[in-house]
Length: 47
Image (cartoon, rainbow, N blue to C red; front, side, top):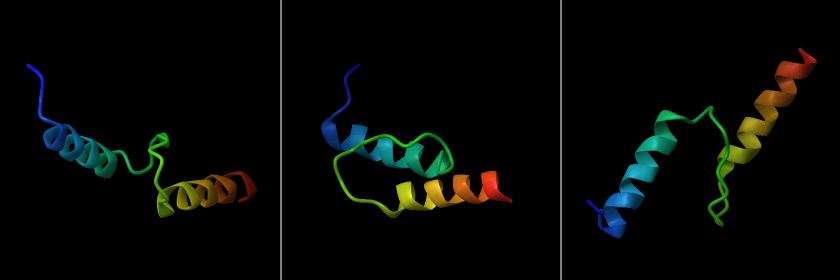
């Protein structure tokens, strides 16, 4: 079954929220998450 575009986008948002600390997926839009995740990784390697 193929979902409408809005349903796929909603599903992507839900997955993004559930996997906030997971891998970063390039979406073509600016987001604070990549910078936040990078800062977390840098703090983890330093501290």
